[in-house]
Image (cartoon, rainbow, N blue to C red; front, side):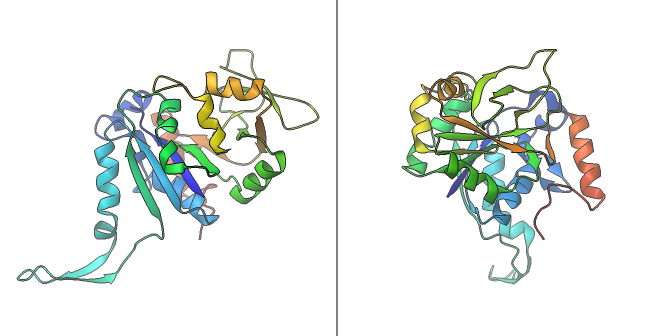
Length: 258
């Protein structure tokens, strides 16, 4: 099963870091937050990734093209150029990097991956947030619900799209932007999608969190997997500092891998 990661935005609220690199490449503990997200999925056996790039996508491309070279010990014969890898640090991942356009919206980026996904169920998340979501439980929940899309509902940090949930089930009854009076669970990403979701995305200008998700709600095709554990997106420099502190403590909640 493939994991789509939205990694194309410019990250204007983190401009101190994103003037020279895309937001998913901002580092936590000397590793891009994108790497942390991928490690979390890989822990649950999900190791085939499709990175949906846009802004400074060349930085992401170079990172993965040079991953083994910059992460491994080696001996090089300068006369011949022969290299002996002493300790290859390659991950057992298969990574596709797509340039989905500089100004393409989130829905449009997803739509551009349709040919890569084909007719298969896929995971989807944002390239700037981490959590200790149990992906196995999420996938099992999605299969039980039998819907086109499942979104992970999380305890909010206070600034995200609000999910209206039925009291006696896990179906989403509304999806809208947050206002000052809102409390409760919000959209934390970490979706599981059927290929039918491509049908609710119109074009490059479509914002995934707006019309597509509203259409899924109208068709009773959006379920919510409730996650009560850790979740934090890296939206601001303060968020980055919090994540750095947690990682430096050796007790980062999202580090589910060994």
